[in-house]
Length: 190
Image (tube, one colour):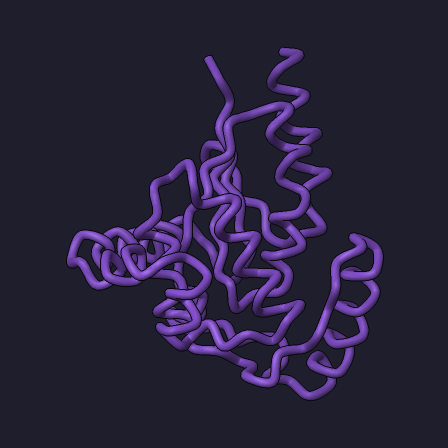
């Protein structure tokens, strides 16, 4: 039986981008399911707030992100529209075929966190993903899927992004990928 990792993410989360860059490591051990969700909905359900809401954490976060993006050799430009309303972009990702989500998501992360593109703007999303994807993003089935993913993550204990699940075990943060690898390796060996 193939092991499975659920990767819950939101484009508004820079740490989710950094986690996404590490997914190939996990794919060597398991099937990874990219599950777009709304970080704002998870924050609301859990009573959590984004780190930048605290000025001291926000200042540290900026320095931390510069270091991490340099480590992963990714261009980093703190977005002029932060925090962003990620509803449109997350609906667009949800509207994509599951197989297309990883590449499109990385493209969108780079557009927002590396190029400061306005991903709340439907015209920008159309340019990056195509008008057909933007049109499908308003379908009720897409809205329902995104809402259900957000509620699923929150009901299982998620309080931010990125959040990973391996079965019932939850892992939070881009810096926990090594623990997921360890757990998958243990299961594979056992």
